[in-house]
Length: 326
Ligand code: ADP
Ligand code: MG
Figure 1 (cartoon, rainbow, N blue to C red):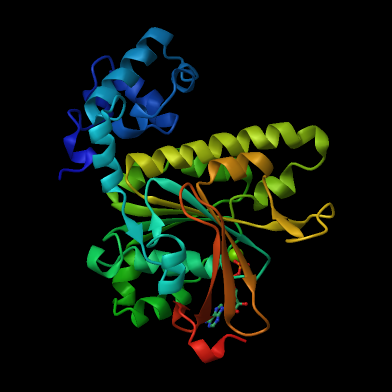
Figure 2 (figure 1 turned 30 degrees about the vertical axis):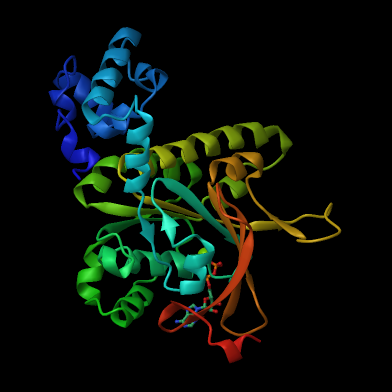
């Protein structure tokens, strides 16, 4: 089955009717480098570039017609659903909890305290995404937007070797982007579409989604603006994941929640916006002092809540041997 990208009638944004060279430059400045991203754009976004409303409408429609992303018959929807791929985490139990792995075309959020294993999972997925489909990979590359200077190449090397990949080759399929502020983080994602296309990126990671937002927008009076920016950012992410049939993975910190007396005493940052935009949410916590972690599926579009354990070792994310649980 041909992919969406190869079905496109127009290959470059200049090829679209009513996009001349200067409009193309304006669009690129706004972060629209591909026909796919224009198909997902809103008129308002293009008007910001000084493009008239009528033309913005034409451009978006032409891009949509070209990449067949707008109207869809129910039987085609099934075909699109069938295009959804699943990426293995490295742990069979965790994959099972997630219904077979982490889905493309959706946002999956791992949240938990410092050291709970969020970034370790992100690293593992950067390696696993490179594996062929029959091994649970997506035969693609990873884009890692790192906001906390967390990415460690040595860790990739260990994990790659363990699954039988040449570390030097594995490094070449991971694109790193360090985000210094929340604005910079937004800018990087806004401009990611070309990199995603050119590098066959099948995994987009934002680690951490919320850290910059949390430290920059302090005080009640800034909360509304923070939430609006976060909302836009996550919608950009979901549009990219859909356009390129990629996994979108975000990590999130937790804060203690004094109003909860029973059950979990922590909750993820970002409130309703992050909660409603993440399709699948997993809460990670330590099980004692060792390498074992507990993953709880907190919300999913169609899977029941549940828990499993896995462990983090030198080799990466693995299943726990039965006698090692505590
Ligand atoms: P966070 O949730 O804050 O992102 P991390 O994913 O960075 O947490 O997890 C850090 C933990 O992962 C460490 O505390 C350690 O338990 C484990 N870890 C990291 N590297 C290794 C390694 N090379 N071998 C074994 N465990 C490791
Ligand atoms: Mg981390």
